[in-house]
Image (cartoon, rainbow, N blue to C red; front, side, top):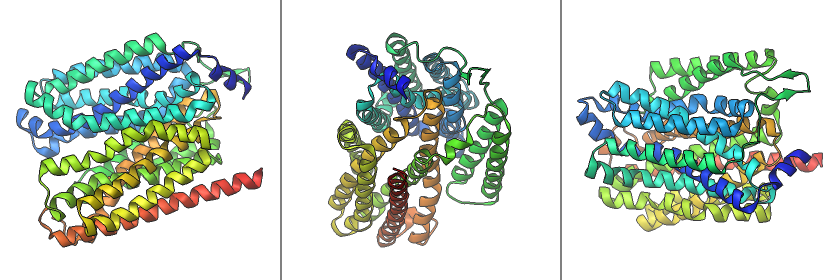
Length: 478
């Protein structure tokens, strides 16, 4: 660990600030590109004379590319150098954004978005990994909190900025903005990120060199793509195609484990999945992300159908969560640095559990005020958990595995989000009692809201149990 400590203590204050600024911009751009395209779907449907199901692939292709490739690009960064790969990813993102802006057909736009997603996967995986190269260990939590803040700002800014740009300049402008911001992030990364964090391929035990596991990469990408598709296609109706894709994903996961156990230089070392810190952290991350997705899936229906809010009012209420998240991210990181990651993981989960209980009860009793109060409990808890969990995982990870571990963290979050879309949406529809939620009675929607967040509370309690078990094992080992 001495070499890591020396690496982390080396940067001067000025270079550390510049590096953090470039990483924050990369995280902002990738998050903005995720949310800004959603608001353009109705416009794209008219522009290309395509069905809504067809234009949804503009969003889905981006998310699928990220999900399928994020672990692989993290590992590739460990092998060829994270600075080099991050710069390549930013360049790829910018070129793909420019291509999307001038795409003459929907098919080419979807293809450009898939390439854009590949560039975003590099950005998401390596920004977290780079914290270990640029920030002293005692400030890791603050850096993680800052990245969480930038992610929340990008997510919150996307719909409003996209709406303004489309109204003023047309749908192509949202991709031109992505290209411009990507170019700025590229210049910042080139200027400020340290160049000596990895030089070429990594020597293993002084004898052999690691090689990139291409068969494992392709198998994992196909497996993750099948799972993401099984959770997202069909607009919430889990039919035969969804079951086939889910079965393929399960079979692919089994094959991946077998394949990784037999290769000399695996994409993911199976020992990592048995690590006493990483394995529980990945599970908790997936559970927490599933819960957070419920607010995006259920919240709009509750506000419009149960409380009778118009689109503008509902949008304003829904923006409170991202705004609170952006405001408390850096604070959460500083709290983690001061009080320790393990304790703050539990504190964050406790706040989230309280927020879920509040969402199950308060909105039905107090309307908008109850909903806002519950969100103000839930969101800081989520940011505190994210900062603490990321810090706990990345604090002492081997420098030759930071990229792949960072990719696994981001993957667990993405899998939780796509799972939450399907599972929490299904729970809500079941509780409402009708597949056509848009025509359900306000009382039924309110009941669905309560039951959905009762289930969400159970998921957070499960995450707390994992955290307690891990803490108990560490204390026993100590």
